[in-house]
Length: 309
Image 1 (spheres, rainbow, N blue to C red):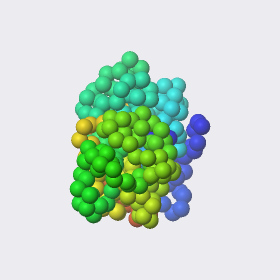
Image 2: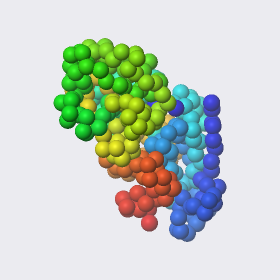
Image 3: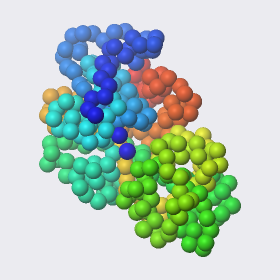
Image 4: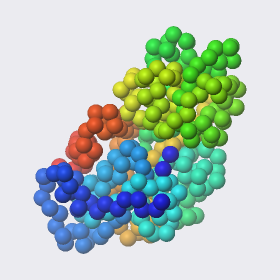
């Protein structure tokens, strides 16, 4: 789940690109309003879901009187450093990523416990975790509904039993997942099974779905909110022994930024409180699978939620 400041885009400039306008047909924001509320710099990671979160936030804050600049396509470590150093004001982070990557803690499979823990620990770093979303972008072990029924495999424990009984199955894994302790190595150790290396295909993130679609693999790793899950009608094996940690997203803001902008937490929580797994999967699907314009997808959702006109 990500060189410093890869791409700097000022919202007002993006409004003019490609005939697409983040603010749509609404009247221009009054310059005095921008001066009153000030400028915010938001960071984002290099995958579709983060781009969606970045645009949803930028559009909404812009229409509520803020001048917004976004810094996109960053790695997790660079985002965290930029936040602490004051190069950005906030970004959307995942609980599991922060716990394990930044705070050197074990991941928590319970979303509420993970959120409480990361929120408490980051208080010491003068960082505030606002409301967490109800979508958990954790790893998912996936196969087709048809194969799940055929094999009688509905949980990861079922998969372990199937393999331990001598059956073979081709598994497509993103390269990082194959080597991580919270990836395939740890999963196999935890559930006490082993897929032979010759039966594992490693590839870039996102290509696992193509491997399944083209019959190169029967089971793959993905993320719970991926749009391809909806397209391919995939079955997610239940993590019945709770191996995978929770990765719920939340706006992560420096406390000095919140102190300077009294309505910021209120506005960001308006977005966070409306995002669940089904919603995020649909938004990802619209952009990744249906190839819809990401700016229009974000504006349509915000309008549907009554957050903009």
